[in-house]
Image 1 (tube, helix red, strand yellow):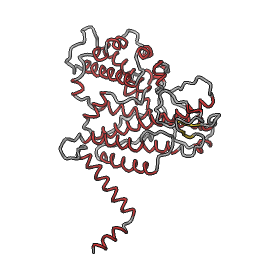
Image 2 (cartoon, rainbow, N blue to C red):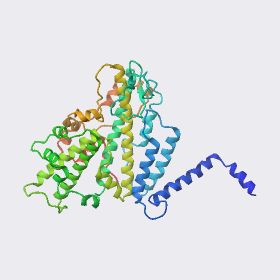
Image 3 (cartoon, one colour):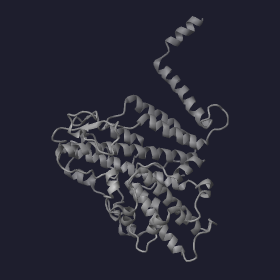
Image 4 (spheres, helix red, strand yellow):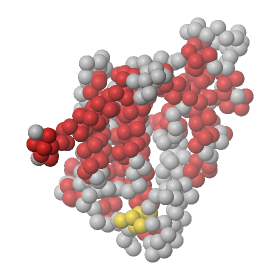
Length: 434
């Protein structure tokens, strides 16, 4: 009898075996969520919301990794991502209602974007020590372990170069939408008491004398403010963001009489506090636009770690990993563009027009801050296209898709909050949610 049972197991249908394996893996994943990551059963686990947020973050990190090259995901990784992300977000089926959007900016869209590079043959990747490649000149800000793009001796063809720019624009729209959604969800999360208790007594103490003086001048100019700041490293950028965010929280609490801490003189009017807050939010917006890859601020980390809302946890973590993924793909596309520029202008003094270029950070060579804010307008993300699809585009179709709608004068005249401006940057407002 035992022998027959054993034979039956050996003859088990491969599809059933896969189903059983998935069931065991699903049990393991959900057990970890229910126990708050404390598999010992000692009762020291984190909240369900934080466990879910961590699970989504860790899944994305293990599946997508660094994204060192522009190439399709492996079939196994793609199947794992779709399967396990469905498991994790299924817990929200009876908690929140996701309102559909015309703009399909999600993990599947990004998979399709990577799939678009399957048929391209004009650029490859070589090791950093390959002396035969003109593009082996490594930029100072590059991570040494990333492979170097190699393009033809005379650079990419006009068609491929144009298509590559199109792919960059498409990914950039996903990046902006993810940034806007993540900022919106984080704003909806309550500020933990532990964060509030650790705040200085006033905005000046949080910012420091130099930053406070530059942000409270009579005639404030964001370009002058940023040029006076040391933004030469990721750590310094994050430190500035932390201090500005803390000051915004302090000013808001004082304006709503929620803060009993002393420090504001009687000569500071409500209008002045509002003005300082608006200036601070403008700087935060520009920093997020220029440096989308910097780590989360102290306020964001505090909110995520103390959040108890599972719906917020899913939306925040999903938009955050999508933002990170889009940022990585953008960087890899820019690597290929840089290699193309070097091939076409081997002796030229080329500088990448990139918001993430560390050399530009140190020298302060960025687009005018006022122009950056003006460029925050409504835009529809183009549909992803393969290189073969792109060749059939007509001039009229290209012009129609590339055209960005300008904001109306009424929108420009309206005073928008930091999150509203980020929503506008993404092209859609994610605020409609139950």
